[in-house]
Length: 168
Image 1 (tube, rainbow, N blue to C red):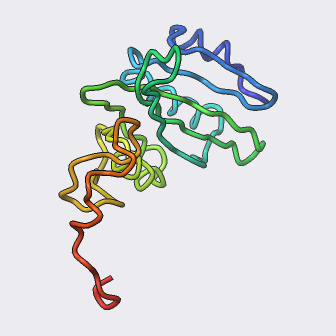
Image 2 (cartoon, rainbow, N blue to C red):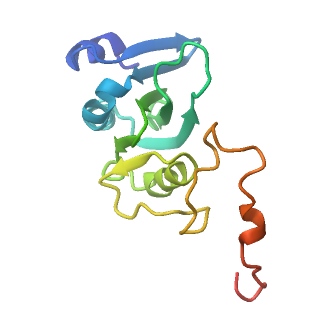
């Protein structure tokens, strides 16, 4: 049984929009509502509708996109392992301090995925148990997948200390 997205939207006060293309269904939370609504919405989808697997979590930077009203998006790909139903929830965040609640309390597998989004885009996850860099050095100041990051970087590649095989 597919989740009734209109009933779910009415239940949460119609703070999100629904998009659908073929069997790809998406709930879109604007930045104005994402910080308060995201965690209760995902908790409801997991506990009441059976979306027990967080299959993917990734970031998007919408800087320079035509008609974009929010800067960053975090996309949660959910799967109901009993029925095979998929659902995507896209939550937005904005500068100067983009932040969303962590979903590690719902899915432990979100831990490293949230760390990766933080490391590459700078989106902080409030309540994350260990939010620190995972791909870049700990003292790295920028976020390489942001659209305003220079294509050739800041020359940081030449500042990394060489590692030997024994050190890695």
